[in-house]
Image 1 (cartoon, rainbow over the protein chains, first blue to last red):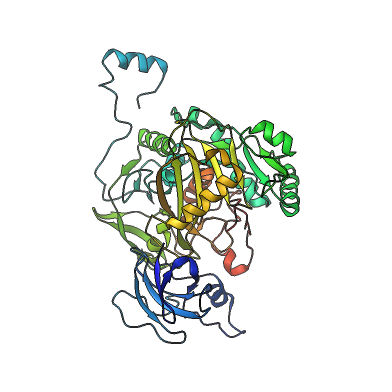
Image 2: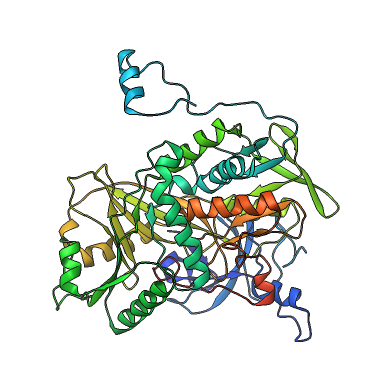
Length: 99
Length: 416
């Protein structure tokens, strides 16, 4: 089980949180083609390394935040507010979509 | 290949079993092959075997970054069944079950396929309706599946607690008698031995570090042991598929999660079949060694850690004990995690890709072991002929763009 630093409540057990998956996904406008829509719905970053993702402290303060986590060690590298850009860290893939 | 038989055992006994041949060679990689398979698990080794045996492609190699069957092939709970809801899935998984039935003879290697029956428990009205729907759908597809009353379920699996006042009372069960288990390692080893005998080079400790393309077609792979030219490359890398496909510039609709399993200390035979329960999220069987084999859930976040969270084990054992209080004093012996690649519709991808000569077999999620022979058999067809096999044709990469999903949300028969 992970110990996760909620920016509002401090360090809490993982079971108090829910992971909301990849962060910074932007919904495209309605007139995009099928490929862009597929990308929005189904294609995710799945790096072996640093992943930007959303978490919610649903059994605590109930608030969302973003985090950078290393998917090999599961260590949290940074926690930052919703709407903020991820802090610069070596190895972070940029953007939502490399295609 | 030295054939295994009672005669060969007797002959080798005379020399104290010191002169058995190695089951496969350890060749140096050649600079060029007709096809390369990335991933030496059951699906990859099986693909190589069928490529050599049924399609005459013998100048091929299997590249494995670790050891054979050291990934999810050696980390699953060995359950085999084909009672899937949709026509496409039933065809694919039942093709596999039919191959399982003759696999030990086919490979001259004991895969210990044991059709001891897979029983899925219904605990509420919803479960009853869903399972009956599955049973009728399965029968229309020629897949055996039958409804049992609680008393019939108890007769089939005596440790089952069918008291009406249990917290999760058993209201009935769906039983697939052809379902069961097999020895996971033996599947990898049997296919490896068979493929090797047909001339396939199996190269372990050889991680692929790059995929070389010439425009829209693949021309070879970079490995830790040098560049290998190949006009056809099959990626069968389970949880690491995204990492490998990124090397070719193909984005995949996959996320990788740790999935755990654990085994108890070995005891005398107490558990005759496989029992699964969606509602309490438990599945359990007993290996021939006597260990209770218990499948747990995935972590909630993507990871490559091959470990899994401790609270997942706790949750799983709570569920097991709700169903089988008799096991409350059993000690758990080992626990491990495997990295499963999960697609949005919980169905696999067995297909060509936008890159010519590059094929992918992935997305088996939490339930790929059962499909090993069927997956390998149809994927070999796709690679050899550069076209889908009729059975794997629906399992394309494009379905996430066209919307033609195969939405097996209950693919693992446990809640996701």
